[in-house]
Image 1 (tube, rainbow, N blue to C red):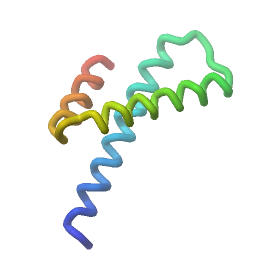
Image 2 (image 1 turned 180 degrees about the vertical axis):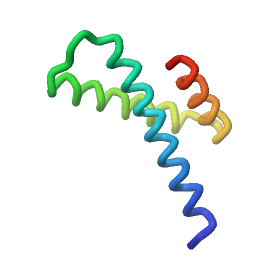
Image 3 (image 1 turned 90 degrees about the horizontal axis):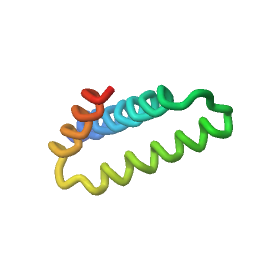
Image 4 (image 1 turned 60 degrees about the horizontal axis):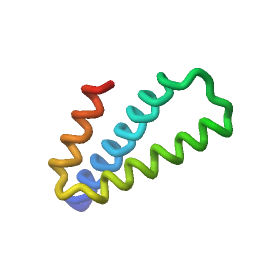
Length: 73
């Protein structure tokens, strides 16, 4: 196993958790979602997370974002 594999998996898992937290937070503020609206919201969340991730200057910034989202939750 390459030493970078666990880092890649950890980062992928962390990004998925961030997306899930954002999604759950948004769902709390919406009265009801049909399947179509749910899928649209999920696409928006994925796009938002990707933009934040790629705009991040370092992994520390990404971790700070995770902590911020977790606190807001």
